[in-house]
Structures are given as structure tokens and as C-alpha cells.
Length: 247
Image (tube, rainbow, N blue to C red; front, side, top):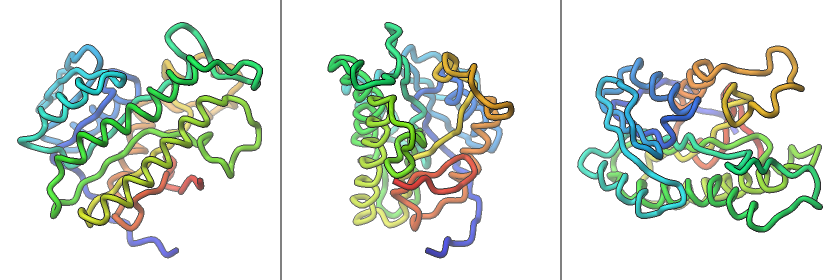
């Protein structure tokens, strides 16, 4: 497929779900620096980042009512970009990714899917409904290369891999559905690389030199990718270089 010529376009308004995380905070700062005049910044506590034009809000990925309330806050002025910068690799109780099928646990799997796939899907459910049909907009969610089935050479990390693969399928479904009514819509997944954050910290010891990216650099990479996407690329997953991550 011949890709369209890349022309960067920056949003005048945006929403970031997960603004208190390492990547989420850096995305908010990067958007503000690039002229985003109205920035909805969502976190579990709802505290602000002190950015110009910021509208803080609280939400919980496991509480659909809180997501619906966040979307309602945006109804009067829907954002041009929505970025779901959330995800979990190690659960709050310390349960990490399974290296063997023998470690599979139904309750832990359910939590990982709730946070990595179901929560972003519910954000899409309530936020995509706000979008005017004739206006261009972008909906993006942080995914991961390990969610690629064709790229899986090591196995393990069962719940995380499967939840990200599920997220990628949901994004593809959303892109197909939105294209029928919103021809200027872009719905994509983003692989940020290995970022120096709370999510990756327990697994950084074995990384090659130069493999770890700082949150600000990761955010700049992802924002640059988003700014150049077109509706022809909707439904796909892209890494921080702008290369497609195959299913």
C-alpha cells in the first residue's frame, strides 16, 4: 500500500486519559507546547498538571460511570484528539506477567483485561459518540508490540500479550465502524517503545544500552506520529518511529 504524503497537523484541543502517568504527563506537556489551547487531563485523582488551558477530570478504568461523566464534561467542546495513555503490566498487588501457562490465574487475567482492553473500549464508547460527523479527529490508545501475534517469538506474558492483542482488535473494529459515519476519523494503536516509567521499571535490568526511552522523548515521538496520520491509516497500530506493527 502506498502511504499518503505526510503532513503534520496539531490539535487545538485534546484529551489524555492517564495524565498522571509518565507517558501521559509527557503527552500533556507536549500537546500544550504545541499549541493545544484546551487540554482535558484525566487521572484517577483528578488533579491538574498546572498547564495552560488544562481541564482536569477524574476517571477510573473499571468504573464506566466515571468514564461517562468524563465524556459528558467534554460534550460542549469535544477534543480533536483523544489519547488513552493507560495500561498495566504488573498489578497493584505485585502480580507480574506470567512466564508460563502454569502461572495463569483467572482473577489476575480479568484485571489485566479490564485495564488494558475493556477500559479503553469504554472510553471509546462514550467519547466517540461526541464526535461531529464532518470533523476530523483522532482516537489513539497505547498498545504494545507484544500484542502482535505474528511477531510473537518468545511466548510468555500471557495476559499482557492477549489483552493488548484484544485492544488492537477493538481499535480495528472501531475504525471500521467510525469510517461509515465519520470519514475523517483516525483510530489507531501506538507502541511507545520501552519507556522509563513505573510500568517498565521492574523489567529494565536486562535492557540493551539505548533501549530505554525517557517519557518526554517517547511522547514527542508518539505525537509526531499522530500528527502525520490520515484516515487511510485508521485501524492500524504504529510504533514510535511511525512504522506499522503488524497484527
